[in-house]
Image (cartoon, rainbow, N blue to C red):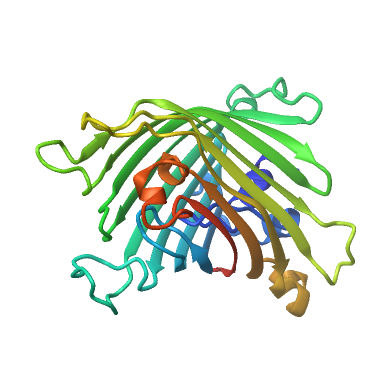
Length: 325
């Protein structure tokens, strides 16, 4: 699989905020990917929209489950030395997680709306140094990876998340045109919590820590051509990041796992309209698991155990459809 094809596959079905997952039939997609005529330095310019539904979401401090509808836009481009990936997601919660202001005890308030954006860029060492020295056995390439996340939501917490990451990505080959990527990176987060009372600053400055982002993708190439399925998944571990505030008694954040262990994707347009329509429409189902949401200890943090013992653990099957344009 080419460097360009491997990373284009990563971009196909990303859903930030409810999780990230990957799936592609890479070679046909590369043939169909249109060059960017305005910026000819970019060899691939791919844009997609996704709708997904998460029935059993959770939010710290919110009792019970919260269903979420997610609307996402994903852009991916490739150039001579690397790739750029941008994902913008709008998440709409049900009434269980109300938008603010919503008077105490009132029912029927509109659900909260969250915006989450992510940028990731890679710079391949094989491309930069014009060498194959970073391809050894199953290791396909080593890249410098940099990126940023941003989030706001109009719920009671009123978060304003800003994250920067930088590190290395190690890309490995898997059977059936598949890959496995692992990226250990430096992680720095700034945020906001409306629950921090005066006179303490409600802006949070968390300690620098580490994160490890992994993802995999593989065609189910042993299946007949009329059943174009792929399997993919991802996981991200973020290390302890302190309290983010000088308010006495605040618990330090714990190791956080945000994952989508498996996503099964059907290239519906290829299956029903032919290979010339590869990945025009993808339909998928996935499982999501998020432990210690936002780094809050699911066993002892008040936001996790006071109203709902499962508020900081998210475990849900969800599904969606992705359309290329």
